[in-house]
Length: 416
RNA sequence: CGGGGCGUAGUAUACCGGCAGUACACAUGCUUUGGGAGCAUGUAGACUGGGUUCAAUUCCCAGCGCCCCGACCA
Image (cartoon, rainbow, N blue to C red; front, side):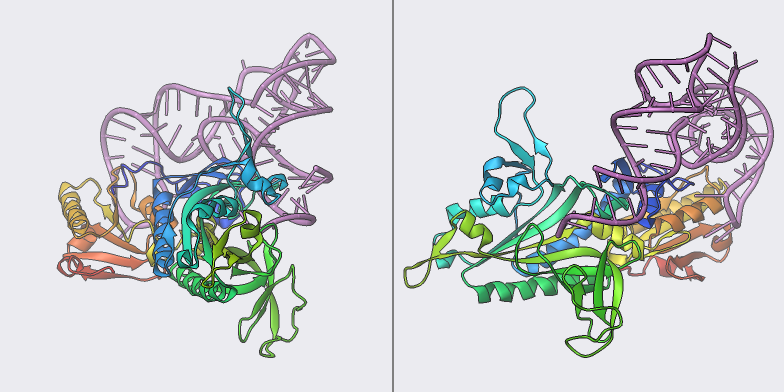
């Protein structure tokens, strides 16, 4: 991608009023555009990163047997009436403008919908277990959207639902999801804590959350410094400086961002929809369910909150919008430009995702400042200075020092 | 939903009861090119509605919007 052609560009100033790092840096960098409070457009640059996060999530969900599907975003009243959740004030109601239609809500979760769908296809214990997920926009009328991508009224979420013949089977799968979530967050270079929490409007039982420590977080957890056992403040009897009930270590309090959750739903939804199966001895039993969510935008925002410096974002390798930021400082010199172009074409031909700053009307300083703001992991500079030594200057965004590499070696490098 | 702050060009801001200014961005030309360049010229602006006033972007009221704190929350 040539930077001269990309839709959207960087801004020199922080957006007015924004205080959270993710809102400031993502808007300044041209990753996202705020349409309304908590409602965002992902610009091409930001969408590349969001898609990479989605790819990681899909890979890990598929690896534990999750099957991707796609449910309706419009959810008719009858579904939520079955569980009494039509009255939960979180929804945006959707009504037809021109005619009388049934009442709908913009989907803010899909337990009811999928449980109803499953009713047609689950008859026998042989149809179980299965797990299905989607990546879809959710609509929740937040009383207070805030902090950029961290709490939105419209956001893209991966929601996974699992269906089981027994409590034990659910628990086994729950552990698999837990392990998959750890992998997802590790691949995004996030240190997430598995935390005991309350169920809210989803389930009466305790649930689990993955929490990432960050000052911008709105959750508070108590976590053992030794074994990392953690509980959400909303249900915890632990206290700061207290003793860990698991290992005796010292408990500390942390502000955190909830990046994922796991809900053991039990039979709450299967009983509401009378979702039963015939077991091996011919008796009917209720299906046991679980649901598991990750907000993709919030995850992206969390990465920015935890991966930045005074100059901009520092993307983790796997979710960076591009792998290499190639910059030419040619001063209009046609020879330097053509050398840079060739390197760009070679990289593209080699399947390397590269953003090429080919802009003629920007000075070196501005290109560097933009590169720091955009946070692509490796910066490669071609200029008169480097070409005199038949070299290219390489600098990792995460490091201070640059080094020269021979162009011939550079083209052979592997960037995996 | 309670409290606070704020709404001026594409962005960030200044001033003001009487012609709205600056910087950046943008356009054109020339110069410039290793850390947000220079000169010249140009385009572009007061959230909405009501009130006070000879006159409102400015003062008052209401609405809407945005940010922050709290409540709530996945």
